[in-house]
Image (cartoon, rainbow, N blue to C red; front, side):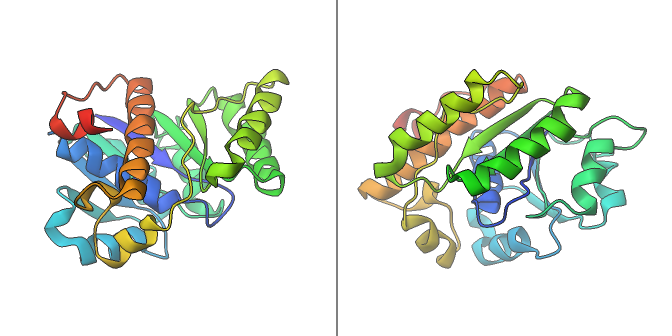
Length: 230
């Protein structure tokens, strides 16, 4: 089993959207997926409760840090996606230290906007807490307006050129109102029907990120009509 955790020192950066959407992409491709809500706010559980069968996977609430540290015991799944708290509280530290001192995730995705006030604390966490552990990670720029894509790419290039060991996803998640509509209707952008441009662009962004994230943990999804559509 592979474990991908999604966490960030910043709130409001699409953390839960990222965790849920990646988990659903994997489940729709036929993997046995457990989506773990490690956030006391229970945003993932609320979403899953509204969505019902639209989210074709198992969902489990584990806000107790001690539970998160022992997630590898659930070995009946191909993939576990963990939605961590929006700020670095006990669950974040627990999943890094793990049960026996080893990090729990195979990969930690760290969402952030491209704004420097969001990016700086993310870079500090990665530098001070992830890199010393040799923790596989990808910083993911999210909520980026289309007009700001060049700026986001410049910010990413500047960080990478500094050579401090930060690792960024190539994919940038653009900001679309369609995400709110999807949540309100108990679905992900993957499930919004038709050729609505914003839905299909949002879907393409997350399918590209899924390809990167799953490749980083040696998961290759089988080709399907959905994965080809992006």
